[in-house]
Image 1 (cartoon, rainbow, N blue to C red):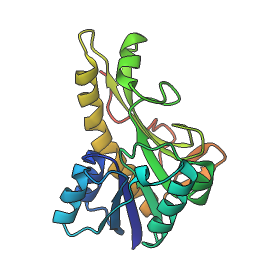
Image 2 (cartoon, rainbow, N blue to C red; image 1 turned 180 degrees about the vertical axis):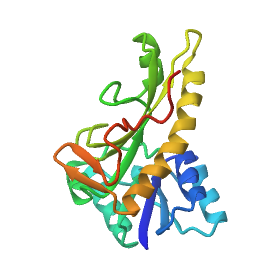
Image 3 (cartoon, rainbow, N blue to C red; image 1 turned 135 degrees about the horizontal axis):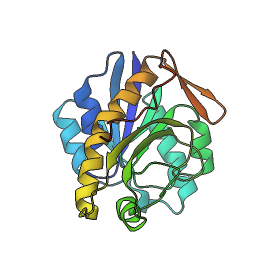
Length: 211
């Protein structure tokens, strides 16, 4: 059984998808938020999952917050730390501490459109496809070895909201699958590449066909 600690800042819809997936061999040890008002905390608590809050506003700088956060996380003896809408830029020391055992999902097809407002960026750039990326976390924001990507079409009349909703559906499908692969021991790192055991050579890891 592998312990998972999930970090959220809001409602935690990806956290909910992972919990609801009931991944074999995974135990959700805790859900932690940097925001006391994060709606996902109540959702997790209602399902008997331990929750904790560490308010970043109570710390003088990122380094002191990240140090306290790591101490809190490590108390749950995590095998994997899962970022699920955790809206904090993490320090190099924190990411190094969890190197190879911390995942994030970003709402774009990385390396395109890191940062915020990814859906509007894709629309403005005239992209025909958009999507999401599950990746191992490194010190560089929204970078790191890619585990899986899910693609959706971009329609001519899309708004940021409509595209975001379509991508979010793929996030909820893709993230639990990637976490399950980690828990099953199927993921390994080869430099910047992620190798997936038993993956077919022709599998491009796209969530949906585009036809």
